[in-house]
Length: 400
Image 1: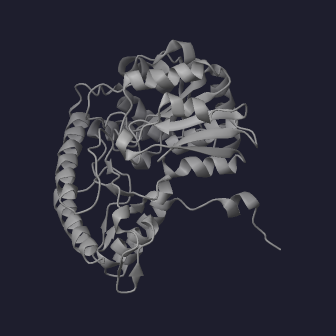
Image 2: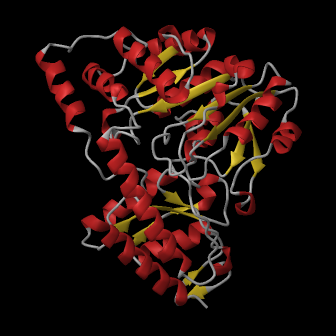
């Protein structure tokens, strides 16, 4: 008799974390593996934020905080939403959680019933589909293409909505494609939502500050559908605070209270010290803060370098990302080819071939819902990027 629940048996391991784990295991065996698999800035948290955490310890912020977060942190997030996004979320509409992933999980659990439909444009961040699976809902995938910059159209969304549709999930800037939605494109999505007042949208904006095109645009800026939008953000990517585990949502009060209720039974409030540090992070203006600007500029330089390097590899199709720190090129030209005992049939085969033959860890596109592609993270040094692409090119040229 199986001792584990069906929900855990049906859930897949995070493919990005799995590739990172395998790469670490190979490194421990002495292999010179370059990992381009994990989505983590290789920068340190700003000093002013670290100092705030030290001060919080000295000031004995070591007791249970309120479940949705300290009042002054939620006030700081409210001001951040207004300053950066022109969104009017009051503190009671904000819930602070242990990372944006928990924020997304709670949003889905608060909204979705078994049998409901959740629309996810492909490609998507790997955890979306697994969270929907745990909620016992049905995922409806809407395929986007590289030719359309991997962005869903209003017509595609409208065609996918049925009486069972409850939620739409997407990210901008996108993981894994690095593409972002313009204000005009978001208005098209908003106009579709306006026709369906009981369909909600979760807008994942965690890469907001790693944007190479200028001003970030939020779906919730359109007042006529604002109550249908749950805006998810956090400090991991834009402030190099992955280990601090702080995410948050802005949502209508009913949804925010539901997430607060769920969190109270699952984790209670997130780390008190990380919360105090995040107050300072929220006060950093991305327009003039040196840490944010320097990190964004460095990622832009790496993007341009990586684009040049990838364009030099024969028979892959690559577009220039507008944000985040990923490339998501089409690599299916190499499917059906082989070298030694390796036969490449799909993106999983290609990722494993490049891991063992080139000692470069990537994430297969199948993990993100597009098996024709493979994801490169360029959150590492120029020298490692140059060497990684050299190895990849050499390994691909061996395939016949």
